[in-house]
Picture 1 (tube, rainbow, N blue to C red):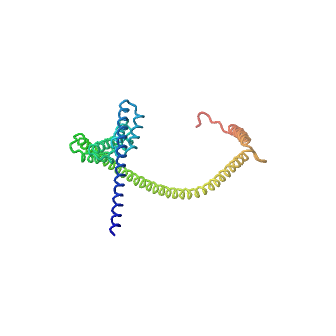
Picture 2 (tube, rainbow, N blue to C red):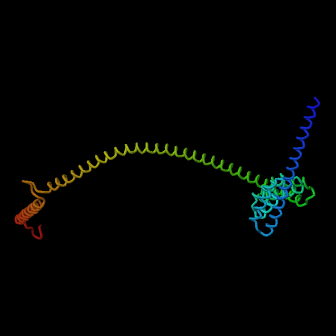
Length: 293
């Protein structure tokens, strides 16, 4: 029994020793990788100072892949992106550094720069949260405190503008609604007017139809009138012809000139007869003397 217990203890001790050895080796490897990562970071910093961004970026990436414990490499790469105004890439690297960093100074700088990226993108609400997180790791940084106050002020201004824009949009929508209702009312009034005009036109057409029927009778009267006039015209020439016929001498009827001539002849004859009778009276009468006692 004691032999078995001793054997178990020996095995456990050996396992612990093996694990400890593995841990030591793993720690050594991690330390080595971190050291290499830091060296690469240093080289990248030197390359960046020489304005060789492409090579510096490559070395930063190698340093990040060598050790996940190196928060400086992503932070410095983020700063390189930020200076080149590549804000999206910069934000990603600052966030990576803030999550990996165990030291507060690195966290403080990472969140501070994240706030700066949000400010560039006018995301003031996110900037406020990033600066607050930065101040939790370093409450004494006046620059971060100033940026936080500025972000709050810009956020308030932005919210006021959004509120004004919303009010304007609401007012515009209300105006459009009123205009739409007004147009609908006008269209309805127009339809009513059209209906009224249609009714009036129908009445007018009806009246015109009645007048038209009456007008149809009038032409018949006109026709009759024209006929009568034509008859009268026809009659008038006939009457003229009759008058002319009356004026024309008929058989056994003297003309006016003949009658005149006849009357003159009769008067002449009568005058001759009277002259003869007068002559006879003169001859047969007694002649008185001048003295007739």
